[in-house]
Amino acid sequence: DDGTGKKEERLKIIREKSVGDYVWNDVSKNDWPNATLSAELNVGDYWTNNLGENAKNMIDNAVWYLGGTSATSASDSLTSQFYSYERGITVYSGHSTSWTGQVGLMYPSDYGYATSGGTTADRNTCLNKELSNWNDSNFSDCINNNWLYESGYYEWLITPLSDEFSAFLLGEGSYTNDTVDNDVYSVRPVVFLKSNIQIVDGDGSSSNPYILQS
Image (cartoon, rainbow, N blue to C red; front, side, top):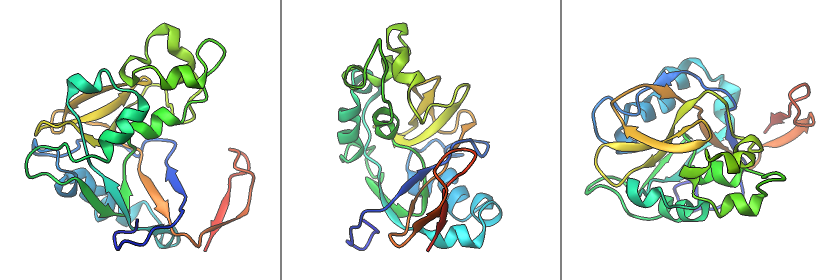
């Protein structure tokens, strides 16, 4: 949904490497539309100085879901349950349950569904294990065979907890959380491309990446 009710199949791109370390919000409120990180990515230095005009013209508005959950229930949550939380209405009173914009962050479920699993823990086993417990040594295949995993990073996610102050983090392949103004963590921007964008060259490898044009 582009925010007007028009729905199309569009490609979602998640940046491979962090663009820097930021607080989620410089005041302790986990309301994404009013967060300093949201402003940084959509109207601030990142948008102004790190994206060329050609890239900006390929990015479309999208509805981003801002449903959350409590830290307690999240510790028992599967990828499929997180997907439901994200699209739910459990937020701190007065905070937004959705936002229409161009640049956001990963959902917890983005990371969960990105695993292919391995020989010790196949994909189905991974998807039936709580995301916050993937750092268990018996589930290392869930992390090591996940195309969104970046070793050494603790990074912000867009999904809040249902309290007023905290958001989820992805760290060393598993989930945790922190208050949004407490510390800086890595940021990997996420966008949806306009539906008319096409791949005109490349095979998607690091040595021969896809070339896009409208």
